[in-house]
Length: 373
Image 1 (cartoon, one colour):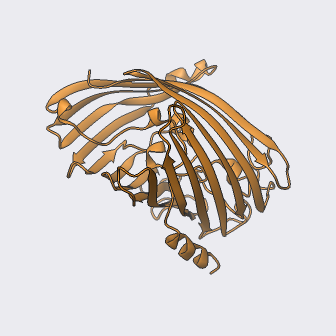
Image 2 (cartoon, one colour):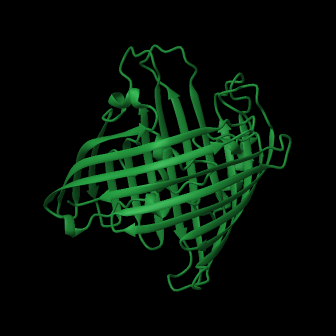
């Protein structure tokens, strides 16, 4: 099959690094003794506004004004076990008529076992979203703010040299005779650092794999099965400048593959495709700047930024087989207080190919994170 040479190429193109994200949106799986043998009450609230002014035939514009919240009670045994129980939900401004349905519509439950200080097993609402470190063609970062929290099983290993995240996200659980099919996502994101801690050059070796599945053996749904995936890798380097304003400069080259085992030609016209994505970035804390060029052929990712795709899943007639996209981004992130962080960003996507459209987005967020009360 034509996809095999691309997959082999990706496996041997082993340098990569994750996409830009606001670092204040990240969380850590590391357990510490400060919380040992204590009950605590944690509150995580993020108010956000994300406005996507998209005019491309591949993706339509939408606006997300709202707040995500996650209050929970927790108990930790030594530095080995942690248990959390609470709730989570999203409130959208201007949608007050549904507030009673959304505020407490999701249970938050987590059990964590630190096999070693570096290796953690998590069951339930694990550390998902931007914590997977996926690149933008594979993961649209705003999904962490608006989507239902991930739930399933996760294994995370992290030390100074190596990072590995393996997870299974169960979007829809089914029982025998259900009229809807099972839906889940399997993912792997790993990275190995080649350089020493004291080196001004940083080079890493990650690999990213996403498999989306829809179907099942015990349901009675007549919906078509889905088995599709993406594999990504490339080459990435970062030079630590260490100046007062410019902290570091990075240059990356990503190669991404797409394969659809059971293509639905009415909605997903291609069974395989690829993309190349060179990116230059400048970290001038608290600002970050990025510019990239996306060159793709018959590409699609179920969870990625829609503007990188070659077809519109929601409007099957909209297809652009070859993509030439220029991306530019600027962001601002600052920790205002131990418990409060703010962030803002602007993004421009310029189609250099057939459509010639200029799409852009902007937004901001304010996060309050009370932990260990």
